[in-house]
Amino acid sequence: MAAGGTAARGEGGSGWERETRAAERFRFGENWASFLRLLNDNRIQSAEDSLNEMLGTGRLDGLTFLDIGSGSGLFSLAARRLGANVCSFDYDPQSVACTNELRQRYFPDDSHWRVESGSVLDEAFVESLGRFDVVYSWGVLHHTGAMWEALDHVCDLVAPGGRLFIAIYNDQGLASRYWARVKRSYLSAPAFLKPLIFGASLAALWGPAALRKLLGGRRAGTTRSAPRGMDRLHDARDWIGGYPFEVARPEEILDFYRPRGFELIRLKTCAGRIGCNEYVFTRAG
Image 1 (cartoon, rainbow, N blue to C red):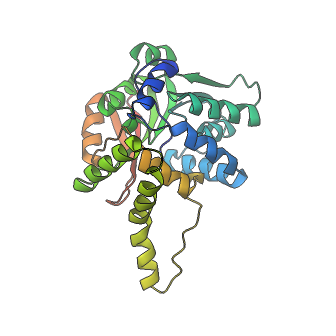
Image 2 (image 1 turned 45 degrees about the vertical axis):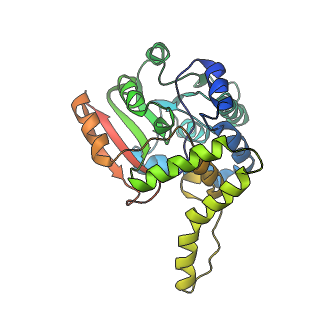
């Protein structure tokens, strides 16, 4: 469920500050700064493995890789370790700081990894980036406040023959509308109420699975580890607070990209549950 970061409208931190003060945007970067304290070699390897699984490319030596909404910087790091020349950007200043921290921690002063602050909704900024062999945006574009515009802007960032790897929240109909209300309530709630909303939301997220385990005679506890090298508690914070929030059905995403010259080569759905559907497209040469 975790998002990669944020890549919304505005320039630098000013728009972000205005939106977070108005309770219109979750502070994703604070969550990622906390997550970095848990980062270890096993999580990094899991991130690399998840890229390899979906992209099917093995090493990325010599390829250019754009990470839109880099968040913690984990997947920029994974791509760089796989040999790619990486460009990372995010709209959230603290996410930019997290990505820079990982760059300095693992690839200090590396000329093959640059980190920028910017918005995928800023056309001039997007045009300045150029084109890339791999464009990656996992759990980000649905947090911009203008998802379909963001989905359109990423098209020209993909080089002919290149790959686009995105993950977008699954549309669950009434359930998605319910969670949108929870997210708005959480953001606008006074500080003393936030833990109560968070706790109730955790029960709604994890309670049914725990009950199924108990009925099946298994322990109800949940492990902190999560796919892609993530952490379940940080994922939950991202889910409960993650606003703006938009969703799409798989067929809507496919119908959107097909006439724009993109062919689906890999689809991994969340099987109708809460979470993201993952898509890998290739752009016609």
